[in-house]
Structure formats: C-alpha cells, structure tokens
Image (tube, rainbow, N blue to C red; front, side):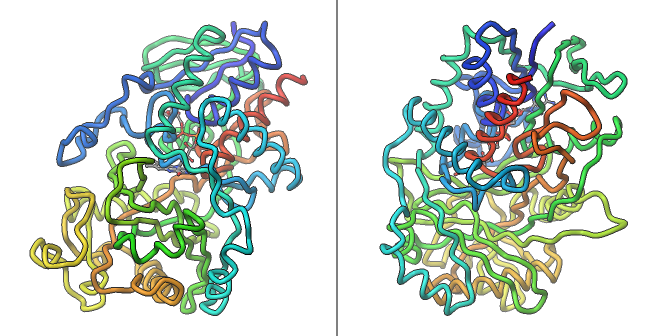
Amino acid sequence: MYNVAIVGGGPAGIFSALELVKLKPDWKILLIEKGKKIEQRVCPMRMGQQKCLSCNTCGLLCGWGGAGAFSDGKLTLTPEVGGHLVDYMEYKEVEDLIEYCDNIYLDHGATKTVFGTNRADFADIEHKATLAELKLVHSPVRHLGTERALAVLKSMQDYLSDKIDIINNEQVEDLIIEDKVIKGFSTKQGNKYMANYVIVAPGREGADWLSKQFLKHKVEMVNNAVDVGVRVELPAAVMEPITSRLYESKLIYHAPTFGDEVRTFCMNPNGEVVNENYNGISTVNGHSYADKKTPNTNFALLVSKKFTEPFHEPIKYGQHIASLANMLSGGILVQRFGDLLDGRRSTPQRIKESIIQPTLSCATPGDLSLVLPYRQLLSIIEMLYALDKIAPGVASRYTLLYGIEVKFYSARVLVSDKLETMGVKNLFAIGDGAGVTRGLMQASASGVYAARTIAKR
Ligand SMILES: Cc1cc2nc3c(=O)[nH]c(=O)nc-3n(C[C@H](O)[C@H](O)[C@H](O)COP(=O)(O)OP(=O)(O)OC[C@H]3O[C@@H](n4cnc5c(N)ncnc54)[C@H](O)[C@@H]3O)c2cc1C
C-alpha cells in the first residue's frame, strides 16, 4: 500500500515525486511509467530509420521524462503561456511555482541563459507586430536544447531512484474507484497497486486513455479548444532578427475571415522537424539541439477551435484530421506554400528545386488542402501573411508546411482549485494529459502544486 501513486513519468509526474520526497521523506511513493528508463529510450527515426515504425510504446513520447525527454527544452518562465494554471490559482501563485520549478531545473543542470527578459530589447518587434495585428506575448525562455533536457531529466531520475519505487514498462489500465474515492489502479500486465492518493499525469500521449477512463468512471470533463495546424519550416535567416533576441516568439492572431485564434507555438531556431506517434497516428513536432545546428527554423501554427454542444470528442476530431494526412502520405505530408496557393501538390522535384530542404526527409510531398478543413487552412494562410509583415520571407513560395500538427489536450478534466478531480476524492489530474497544461514548465508546476496539497492533508 502506497501513500501516493503517480501515473506517468513526464515532468508533471516527476515534479510531484520530487516535491513529495522533500515534504514527506518517510512516505511510500510509487511512480509507474509505461515507457523505458531514460537511458534506454530510443526512437528508430532518430537512429536513421526513414519512416516512423509506429512502435507499441513511442520512444519519443514515452518513458522517463515523458514528452520532455526529446523535447526542445524551452522552459517558458511566465504564466502567460504553456497552460491554464491561472484558471485554478492566483497569477502570483503560478509565478512563484514557476520560479520554484525553474530553480529545481537549474539544480539539475539547466543552462543559465534566459532569452527575452528585457522588453526594451525587442520593442521594435513588438511595434511591428502591433501594426500587423499580431499580439506578441512577453515570455522569457530558458533554452535547454534536446541534449541538455535529457541530461537534466536523467539527473532527476538518478536522484529519485533510491527514494521512491519507480516501475517502468508497465501500463496503467484501469483506475480502482470505490464509493467515489480512489483506491489505486490495475495494470495491463495484471498487477494491482493500492494507494491513498493517486496522481494521474499521462501527458498528451495518454490523454485519450484518461478521457476514456473518466468517461467510464463518470468523472466530468469539459472541452478545451482543439488545436490543429501545421509545422512551418523556413530558412533560419528569415526568423533570425526575432529568434536571436527572443529565441522564440509567441504571436497570437485572430484570423480575419473566421475570427479563430491562430498562434505560433514551439519555435526551434536552427532546429529540425520530427515525427511523433500517438497510438498509431503520426503527427509532426519540432525541436533543436543546443550544439548541432541546421540551416532551418521551424515552428507550429495552431488554429484553436472550441466546439459547442452536442460535440464531446475533441481528441477524436484531431485524430481524424491527422489520420487523413497519414492516409494520403503514409505518414507526414509536406507542401510548399506556393504550391498550396497555386492549387497543386508539391512533388519531390519541386521540393528539390527549392531554396530550402526539409529536415524531416521522410515527409511525403503532397497537398494539404485535401486534409485540413477550409476554416483551419484559410486561417493558416492569413496568419502566414501577417507574420510576413514582421519577418519578411515567411510567406515565401518556398516555405514548407508539414501536416498535421495537433495537440491532444483538448478534453480538460473538471478539477478543483487543488487539481483534484471533482467526482473522485484523492484523485488528482495534472499536466498536459488532464488538459490543464501544455508545456514543460506548467506541467512541472502542476506536479508540485498537487504534491503540496496531498502533503498538507
Ligand atoms: C518534440 C517535442 C518538443 C517539445 N518542446 C517543448 C518545449 O521546447 N517547451 C515546452 O514547454 N514543451 C515542449 N514540448 C511539450 C512538453 O514536452 C510537454 O508539455 C510536457 O512533457 C508535458 O508533461 P506531462 O508530464 O504532462 O506529460 P508527458 O511528458 O507526456 O509524460 C506523460 C508520461 O505518462 C506516460 N503514460 C501515459 N499513459 C500511461 C499509462 N496508462 N500508464 C503508465 N504511464 C503512462 C507516458 O509514457 C509519458 O511518459 C515538446 C514536446 C515534444 C514531443
């Protein structure tokens, strides 16, 4: 019997464990993770494999460190981005939690440099953005890069390994709930683990599993907006005036035709585009290394759409669009912006003739207009033209658009201001999988916050 059992070894689960160990060193804590230990994690595509093999447990997303392990390791140091924690607590409290978690990252070896702290340094960018009807969100960033992110998370694994029970390669299947109180969970491997408190932190990869569990156990959820879009890749020189000072720019636009919010997300200067696999569905993402540079910069353009009654399955909607891209291309589809505007598919020859070459070489040249709904596609085109006003060259005919990028955090668990599920006592739902966060820093902060509540009880 455990005092606390944590499901998922991503930043949210790890920071819950770190805080619990600090506050309650004598408690029995379990962290269960369906993927491997961090040093054993591999993604065949990172080892030179041309196509995503749709591994049973995706090495890129699952295992110690979760999606954070091979992430770009951009720690955004503001409550403004990366999640919804300000919906549950005071703004100042989120700021304090971020500072607290940032110090833990530093203790475990995070880089010291922070980009975008002094607003005066980028007043000209802000000015141009305003004229282009774009909102530039002030968000200082500490950039680890993929190699450093791995080392920092490995240091946390080493620190916790003799203080808590860590079980890898075991997948939680069913929550055990009696009289609206959590009792523990059973696993696919046939084991049962009982605990006074359970923290579920399964990430976006486990978001579908979590929403099915909550549907089954009648735990209430609300629809978040569905974020669907593309990953943009262009010559690093185009974004350099912005990325050299801000590292990444968070820009928000309300596309004129439909009025939907379009935002830039996860910008990776000199980075590479990657393929990830959510239970058999290939989607696209990006990251960069601290030392290894490519000539390209990539970022996502996500269009947010919130569905109203009677639709209740935003995750399925995202999966459906991504599956369509998979069906047409065998995985990830890539198209030049000029070809999209000309109403024709991109071909290997057209891409070869471009001034920029895709860093995700397995992407199949194709036609995004056969995949994305008109609403999202037009909003993306309008956003590219707006961005072109602050970074000329964004709307170049050579700009590459990869599809589909989708964020699976669209079903938000109904939790209290303590992140405890409304319907089930002592069950806490945190991180990206619960829909309350969407980035490393707020996911980590949600873990600390849940741990403190539990320790206080
Ligand atoms: C390529 C890439 C680049 C990124 N770059 C950045 C960035 O620069 N900055 C940023 O802020 N964010 C970035 N992110 C997003 C960031 O990684 C996530 O926001 C963050 O990891 C979420 O943390 P989490 O703990 O909620 O979930 P995750 O990190 O997804 O961890 C969840 C864990 O739970 C495990 N799990 C799921 N279901 C079960 C189950 N049933 N039983 C047992 N275990 C289970 C999974 O295997 C996984 O390891 C990036 C993500 C990717 C993929």
